[in-house]
Image 1 (tube, rainbow, N blue to C red):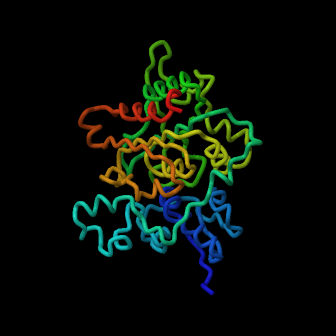
Image 2 (image 1 turned 60 degrees about the vertical axis):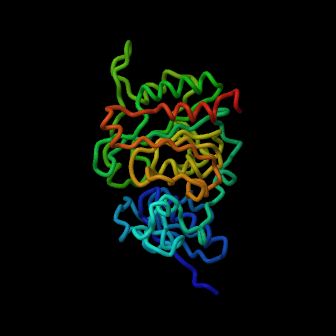
Length: 319
């Protein structure tokens, strides 16, 4: 009989979702998981394990010391040695494109979060889409990738006109264990004609069909992450910024429009058929890559393809 394994992890949220949890669930299904040591608030993601210790208050970005080095996939952006038998640097250009986003799935299975957390007894809005935004440092640099006030206005108006409610998520970075990019409490603001300075949270208050996720969580009263999983499990789809949140959104089998600006996610082929984004729950993924350097050069974020994808996915004439 194989020796039972304990997973000890305090990596970035995206790493934990893509590399740690699927390995833990794979071990669990084979009776080989002893327990999990993880960050505060993460127990609901390991609902299948009775032995979960929430030990860490902060996430570490050093992958040589945060636990991912002990996982079958120690790098979230590819596993070239497992899939090609060679290091990424030794691959041809075509092979690199194929390798991007492709992990080793031999010991990897995402838990069925939608089935487990879809609780019809909860009082939630009918037919809603989750918009998952962020506004924090990006590897030490000022925020670039986010949905700004004008974009949110267009999204809220679109979903209102097409019969959807919206659950708006934009963490204040006080709800969970953070990494070094999430230490500051920053606000998305804009001067709006007739309104003055407005935040994204202020904008939500102007719509009867838009609900702050934090408000829904306060009513559910099950803790932040368990309530979040309940909310995501009943969503009709997602519009998300790239990063860890987009990985979570891709775990519920519903369409996800993702706006990506930085990190290795912008590499060609990253969201192709072998990508872990598509393997998590077989969700339809609609990536929009708008590179940080291009945003800086042109002086604005280009959401045009985001709007196009949303219309194709969520338009009432299509659904």
